[in-house]
Image (tube, rainbow, N blue to C red; front, top):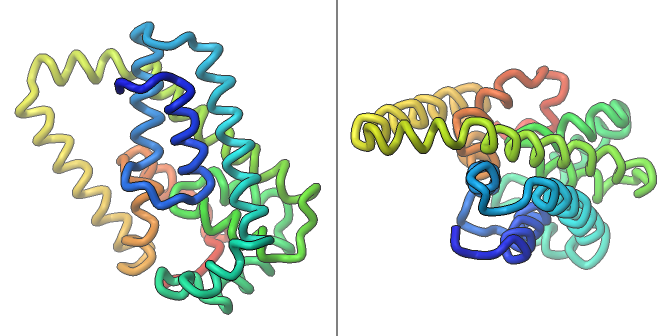
Length: 219
């Protein structure tokens, strides 16, 4: 990680705003937490930076969908399974479930982007939707920073001690997690949302999400 904290923050904001960047945000957050534990960045600045990421990224995606981004979504959304019918169903569920669905959906890997898209395309007022969405985003990003901060040195030491076997084991675990993820959510939805939950920890967290918070059926 050669970039400074402002550059990393800007990249994470774009990711939280739904920009299709070919780098998983959860992995970047874990690495940022590990680099912070190694003294590369001050912890309090990292915590403030990722709070900014949660707020600005979530609000940007919400207002983009509600504004000019809606036309882009209507045109390209069906290609990735975000059809108007499914988004309408998701928006209706959000309106019925309220704050809990907004918070849990935004904090749950695989449901994060679609939760904001559904909220932005619904009749929910920003003053009702955004606080819960931003809180859910904050939970997600801060937990990954904490996990990287606490486990980063141990993971780095393990890799240094046994690079080959460790990488092989991690690859097997990741492949198994992807298989379980796809089987649980269905091939189409599982592959679409893997970008939001590429680390095994995220997939395990998503597997524990109550069924009532499955916002859309993309199977």
